Every structure is written in C-alpha cells, then in structure tokens.
Amino acid sequence: MGLIPKDQLRQLIKEHNLQTMEDVQKALKDIFAETLQEMLEAELDTELGYAKHDSKQKQTKNSRNGYSKKTVTSEYGELDLTIPRDRLGEFEPAIVKKHQRHVTGIEDQIVSMYAKGMSTRDIQDHLHNLYGLEVSPTLISNVTAKLLPLIKEWQNRPLQSVYSVVFMDAIHFKVKQDGQIISKAAYMVIGIDLEGYKDVLGIWIGENESAKFWLHVLTDLRNRGVQDILIICVDNLKGFSEAIAASYPQTEVQKCIIHQIRNSIKYVSYKDLKKITTALRPIYTAPTEEAALLELDQFEETWGKQ
Image 1 (cartoon, one colour):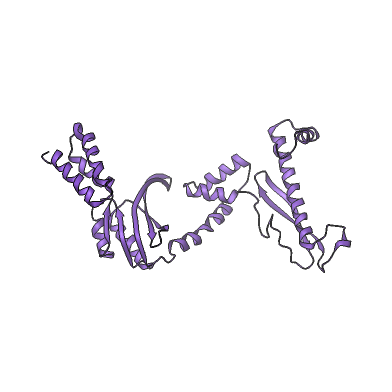
Image 2 (cartoon, rainbow, N blue to C red):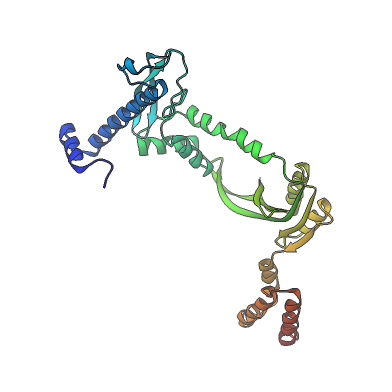
C-alpha cells in the first residue's frame, strides 16, 4: 500500500487540477513545505509538552514566542518556512536545524560531483537542469571547502605503532585538470593491525607510480607513528624493495604472486602459456611450504629443460 491512499491522491489531483509534470512538481513543493511546517509545529509541541491553544495541559514556564521566517532549498526549489520559537530560547528543531539552509541531499551531490572532477560551472548547470536549483559558485565552493579540513585531519591522523601486514599499490585513473584529461596515480596503503582489523592508512596522489614516491609514502607512515611492519605486500615495481628496506629494514617483503607470474610468463612461448600457468597454480595454492616445494620440484621436472 502506498504512503497516500489512492482516493486521496485522486482528490489531490482534482483539487489542484494537475495536468502537467510542472503542476505535479508545484503541488509536491507545496505538500513538502506544509509537511515540514507541521513537523516543526509538532516538535515544539513535544518540547513544551502541550499543543497550541491548549494551555490547560501546560506544565512548564516556557511558552511559544511567535515565528521567524526562513527560506530553505529543497529538491523542489526554495521553500518559505516560519520557524516556531519558544520564549526561553531552548527549542532546537531537528527537522530543520538552526542555520540549516538546505533540506535536501544537495551537499552530498555537490561533494560527489566534485570528487568526480566536475568543475564548479558543471555542478551549477547540472543542479539547475535536474532540479531547477539556482546554486551559486560561492555555495559550491563553501560546500567543498568544508571537506578540506576533514581530509587533512584524516590524512595526518596518528597511526598504530605496529602493523602485521600492509598492502601497497597504486591505482591509475583519468582526471580533468585545467580543462584537460590527464592520468594520475593514487597510492593506496591498506594495513592490518595485530588484532586483525583492516584500515586504509592513507591515499597519496602522484603523477606516475615510482619507487621514489613510494619512499615518500613510507617516510610519511613512519612520521605518523608506524614503527614496524611485519610484512609488506607489493607488486614487482623496480626499486620498491629498496625503498622499503630504507624505511623498514626488518620488514619481510612479499611480492604479489600475480605480478611474479606475469613476469615469469614473459619468457614462455604462446603455445605453452596455458600449460605453464596451469602447472604453476598448485605451487602458489599449496597449503604448506613443504607441499609448495614438492609442487615446484614437479614443475622443474616437467618444464626445467625449457
């Protein structure tokens, strides 16, 4: 069953003479505004403990003290509300908070579009075309500016002193910068602590993946409190192991099996490729080191001469 019974919907359509999508949008806007207004009134009733004009139930020194006008932005455009006030100034509305100017997911949408590399003008046009909202460049800048302190706080937060396993890899993606599409590398570091909990330790943005930049990342981890890492899992990037040894000389480096296999099969002829990869699988999926060594001996017997 729907939120509103069908007979009430039919009555609504008839009363408002709804014939076009614009008529529906306007009616929804009015309904949304009236619903918010009634919710604000109900909040104050709850706060004071008695309904309007029902002073017999009053058990508080506080009372109603008129209204203040407020314009908020919603998916349906701007709404004019009258916010009820109390005489003692204790009322804190939850449905439309003090200083809140948006009753929509507009801020989340701006952040999402900003994260995807859309310009201020692109975001402005998108919101206008989709919702009919006139959003100023200043508002967009203010919303995205709120993220910067949070991002910096997250990037510089202290880390644990010891991690059992840390995975390091770069993700390459295209971004729009100065009107051009360019490639960037996001250096991702994921750690598993001694209790087995996984956490993203940081994300660093660079032009291209390099061992030199990874050394910068490792230095940053040390500066943020990471004193020891038992195992670091990496791909086979040239110079990566040396960069790790410079920062964490006692750490065991586990190179990615997939990258090792890819490097190995560079020397395999195409006609043997499938057979070789099938023969390698029992080695790296073996349950124990001893079983893996036996599989390696078997591989050597079959393919060693080639």
